Length: 113
Length: 114
Image (tube, rainbow over all chains, first blue to last red; front, side):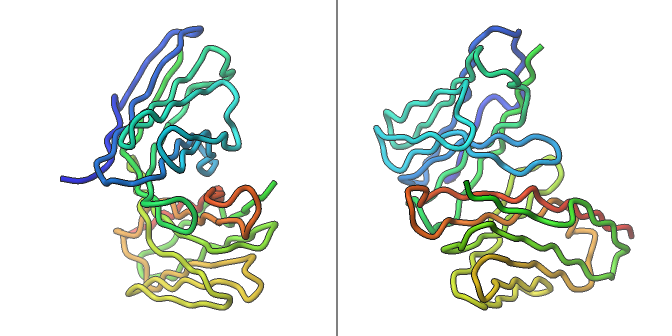
């Protein structure tokens, strides 16, 4: 069964702790993306990767880090430097970057206490 | 940077009424995509428009891309309760270093009263 998985669905962390969100896809897609969604706002791009071992900052990369060591995996670390980390985080992939549809995972809702 | 504005932010309709959401970009787009997110769910791709003035239909949904490739609209005829959700447009910048990045509008939250 092909798709994108994100785990966990809900995550709670104390302020000042780093936390890593998982994103795995078995669609054989080259491009992967991380978005943040806040109430009343659209999806804002954090980081994206067009190919394994390469990634670029999106519009709101400060306080986040990523890696792309494997084609199927694109984990996102929310660091303590992120001022307002509580949000809904969505991972997506597409067969290639550019003018292609994106497939989204179910999302991780992170709450920092 | 590129901005994509979407209006209205909220729309409440009675079942059977029509619904339209509008999307405007500050820059010319290569293409525009539309996504639907059901309450508690994740965005799901609906359609992509590429050509200037393009119109596409999916059953009760009609999508348009402006002649200048800077605006788009989604129209739903005779809404049903299954249409409930948030509709997002997402634009792909025409050239430049941001190729490959989608810029999403804020979304329109549609509520349908039976």
